[in-house]
Image (cartoon, rainbow, N blue to C red; front, side, top):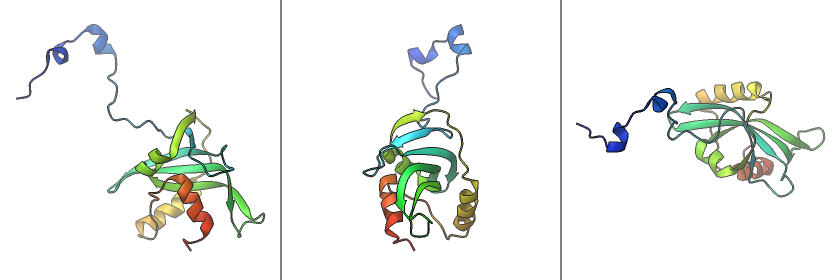
Length: 146
C-alpha cells in the first residue's frame, strides 16, 4: 500500500479543472528554433527541430541547421549554408542548444533527407550523431566520414 502525504490528499475545485504539469517534459519541441553553441563566424546560425522519435537507443531529434558556412567541394559555390536533415541523440541536442529563438517557426523542407536517412538507418547503414552540433559540423567539413 502506498501512503499519501497530507498535501497529496488535498483536492480543490481549482485543481480539478487545471491540467497537471507534465513531469520530465523536455524543454525542446518540434517546431522550435534554437540558438546553439556555434563555430566561430557562425554566431547567427540556428537549428530547427523538425521531428522527434523514440528508438530502442533513446530519443532521436531530427534538426535542420541554417546560417552555416560548411566547406563542401561538391557544391557549385564551394560551401553550403544549411543542412536540411541531421539526426541527433537527445543528449547531443541538449548539450548543443543555448536559448530558444522562436517557439513556433515555419517548418523547413526536411522530408527528403529524413526518408533517405530512415531507409539507411533501418538497413543499419546510417546512425545518429551523439556529438554536440558544433563538433558534428567540424566532422562533416573534414570529410573524414567518406
